[in-house]
Length: 308
Image (cartoon, rainbow, N blue to C red):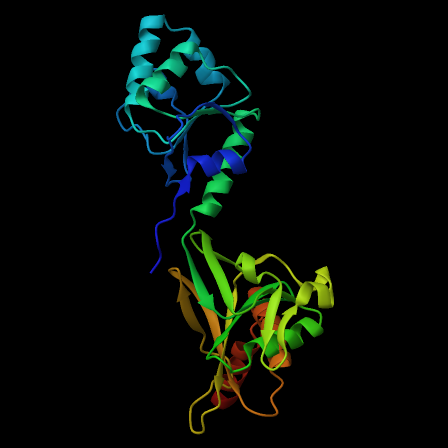
């Protein structure tokens, strides 16, 4: 189950290093949407379809237009604006809030803050920050490795050899992202990004050895903080008589956070070099994305041969 994400305004202010103009001592709101609203129409008196549940940003255009209105009109518009439960009102470009605005914020217990950035830069930064923080996420038991630029998620039953295989891949020059627990976020409709929980960053557990610090053992070139998940490799114990795909024509997918990800199943038994197999699988995946599918070409040649 994917839980709804929220970001408190206090955290938003702290992490984006914003200036607090007014915030009640016990006042805080939660931001639930990454979209940003510029209340230009509201300043003009149009409140139908007002997206009040978003962060409200005032730029120079809105600020200068509002200052042209007579005071009674400004007070009516401010009264109406702050009567909605907006999470926070931000003034960009280091512009000043009027005393009327601050007094109205106090009356309705709203939060107003200021940024020194230009309006466009602030909106881009705030939207990117919120998109990341509010992205749907889940934690998957597995190992995420960057192999030739392809994010490969290794999954399988406990003890099947995921961490040992990942360690061999690191020795072969690839990079560890997360071991044991992978936090996956959907940052776009079809993009999944995985990373390790803070407490497990750059660490790997090898049975019989213990906890390894990959960053210190192999250097910063052996790790990365996050990676797009593009392929899943499921390791499973070899079962006699079970069918395993030998040609790679039929593509299998696994759904994570409503996003289908290509998956291969690799049977595990003594003598198989799993690290090398997964390395080749990542190369093959990359080759298919570039338009060359060896399995399909082989199948076409075989069908042509049989029809001759």
